[in-house]
Length: 316
Image 1 (cartoon, rainbow, N blue to C red):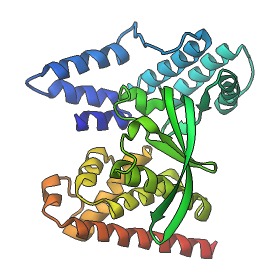
Image 2 (spheres, rainbow, N blue to C red):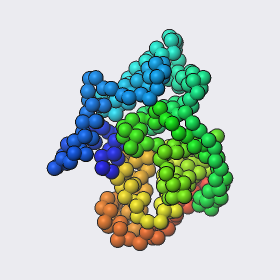
Image 3 (cartoon, one colour):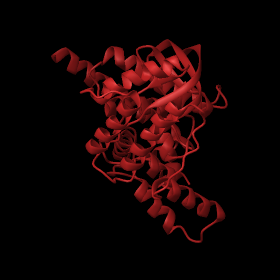
Image 4 (tube, rainbow, N blue to C red):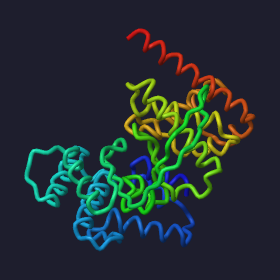
């Protein structure tokens, strides 16, 4: 079901359901998945099992759920959906003001803190996507990234009430593994059962550590450029073709979605250099190529990009 969930994470539930509907014959698993998604996204009486008895928290989460259903099915323009979300959240704050949604979420964060929860608002492009969790502990790691060794603090988060729009779109089968900001790295602990495995050490730790480095050294980079560099780091340090299959499934030529778009850009660049073709989407073609060639080409692309960024800094 990788293709199905990739479409969900591209913010396109409608296409994901079309893909599911086309699969024949239908297994029991697919029938249950169709039922679950139809009930969540296309039912007039969608029900969510919210794991708290706090009525105020339930109301706030319901507001986000309504917003997610709207934008993920393209039922309204994003700007309209965001205005409606802001109005709904302000009702739960008992305020009538000219607060924009960032100010509203700042107020929410304070109340969630009083109730013993962590809250992160803002945008996981292109949609709003709040994260709300209960537990957090901090671990330190020494991380190697290209030409650097850095020490990072990783805040291990658990007991989530809400995992952003990606978690909602995938019933938390695929969700954000974490993020980086000026306070360090934040990790969704349940995503990583083995902290010694490549999923954590490469796809999370090196990826996010590269973000942390780039925030300091190239502070003007936009989301798609940050993801391009961090995903190249995944290619550089991965040991086999599994990462290629993941990025091929995720890839989407749409700059509004920085994660899928950066996957698309990398596959396009690697295709041009290795196969002299515009874009190779067939995983079997990639499997015939020695992974070390792919990895070293990714390193060349990373170093070329770094040189270009440093040149841009010199000009400015």
